[in-house]
Image (cartoon, rainbow, N blue to C red):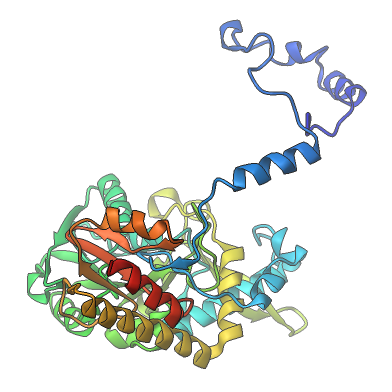
Length: 429
């Protein structure tokens, strides 16, 4: 594949002449000579399609493929029904671009509207945006929604995913926020640690260590102090746990990867955001609305776009310039394929299998680091999780995530009883 330039030499020469240049050197005549590359680039020769396919296949053999996965920590191995890929891989969805022109973008706008509707049903919130880049960005953008000149403190629980806390800190540094980390007590956020002069608090359910937080009590304490509550929640857990709205959260955010997106190194993933009616106009990005056209037929439009491209820069609440439309569609198709009962079953399987694994590991001599209730993840005390994982990897098993003082195990519906028993047998040696 030596060249991706489709134009012939003659066509290129004609374009140069039309633009008033005699050659490519003439086109770049204003560029200082010392900045130009002289001679050939130090690149290998181009390859044919056959040679490229063979090379990529050879490189793929270097990947480590595990037969069993017992790791979550923010990215989860779920079953994706075949219909999900069948729908989202249709050409009209894969090639669609930003729906600036509503009259020719009705399909994309409707898909986003359906996604927003499902996120609102899932979270119990009044309004959802069209999605953002990932769960960490969603949390940081939610903090931006709460920013106040009078309140510069942002409370972030230590139980929030470490990567999410880093992104919040990056946003906060630029905005000169004071990020206050709330330390955990026995793995949980203590409502008594909330200070009065904070703009918002970010908590996670279940938290990074798998524990189920007392979000309702935290929300009540926060609201009594005038603090906005941002809840980052695992969407699968919403199948059996109360929704963010039922917990009393003002803004619901999270990582949408469990909703039909496969595990991939580097994404793409999906950040969902939803809020109460009171905060609707502060939601970043896009909101698609349903209306009627001049003939009275149902139509979809971009209703709100609170970003710098559409309003005066100093009044913009965000500089988010796009949304994860294809990933949002994936989440919609996944949720539609499963339905409420299907999502509930997935959540129940995750929880029951995680608790079975925990009980079997206890029999094998391991101890839980925390006493609280958990959903699909839990931390076991372990002196050398790295060595344990190396041993498991030899058997094709991806072990839990090493964390301070232990190892964070995870189960989903993908883990069979036989796989769990094989894991326990291996770690018992």
